[in-house]
Image 1 (cartoon, one colour):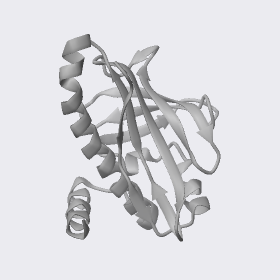
Image 2 (cartoon, helix red, strand yellow):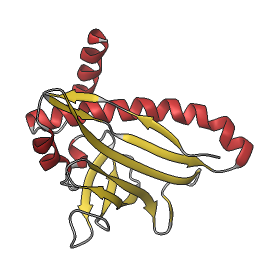
Image 3 (cartoon, rainbow, N blue to C red):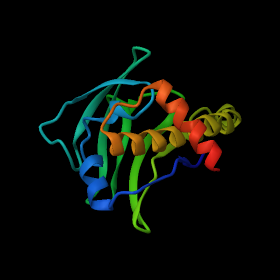
Image 4 (tube, rainbow, N blue to C red):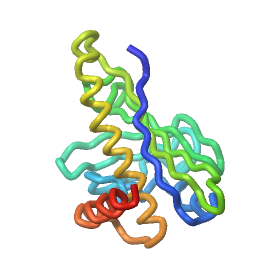
Length: 171
């Protein structure tokens, strides 16, 4: 089964260099990723390929995230895992790409979930459902990233709901 992607997008009225200064800090994803309670950086290296963190979820789960690709000024790709296995057993691989691009006078945030299902035909049946849920999650992350980068304030579930409603009115 091929790799699938679920992309969220949000424009932020901020130059890409300024957004990059915020994005490159791998210790703050808990401020804008829904369901993440805390982050612990586990390596002396805090950015670049090989930097790694443990993510503590609201539901009690823990997973590791390790940077596999790093493009200064534009983003990075992290592998989501537990040891040498994917963090979620239904995936053959699961990665997350944080990408930023110039967008007029501002920047386009494009958080992307990249995944490959396991279990052959069963995975193929589950893939559209997973894809829909991941598309919603990636869109939420994009909205929450923009809010956090603009305000410096952790995005609560209540605030995320407001952001979704505001976004729906504009669409």
